[in-house]
Image 1 (cartoon, rainbow, N blue to C red):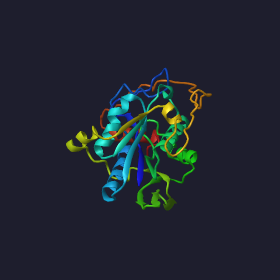
Image 2 (tube, rainbow, N blue to C red):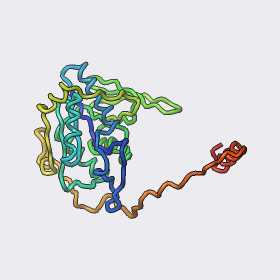
Image 3 (cartoon, rainbow, N blue to C red):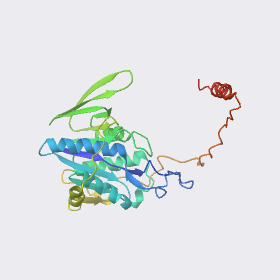
Length: 266
């Protein structure tokens, strides 16, 4: 069984996150960069499954700049068997459609039985990459899962909402995405950090993906075609206005009730 986990580096949610007013993209130098939390939960599921099922290989796959190397290596320290980073200057500012094409080509290059991702990242929050990959690779998709049961030939799980729980099942190969209902990730220990330095870490470019794999032909990705997404307007987030200050001169309760009513908060 080969499980490929889609990992992504994102600005730390506990830090300052800003938007570049020149490009319309997240300014990734404005805060610390870490593995996205939902990605860590996906990794935790795959690693925990591999620990209980001999012969399972967990591969961490990411598309990012060279600066993401440290974050991707954290996946190895957590317990992934190897990592693959697709990086190319031509991919700077790639939108979700181009990202999906590149990841699909990388998955074809690597080979897989199951692809696991998060339901949506904390930076872009698009939540469409798993579905786009399913379309490009012509495989079943089961997204926003709250639980998973995996066998050698099938994957099943539940998708829970406020009103209904849906039970899903698909034959492998397939792609799934997990939600925050999954367990939090383990913290890499010293042994894991040291062993990560010896694990395979493959860096691929677009040229490498065009070269293909042992199992099939390569994929040509046209990054110079007409833009898939166009930024038409960029503006800074408006400064937070001063709040209403209520001084208690014996009528604070009345003033507070009027404020809540005026703003339709009650």
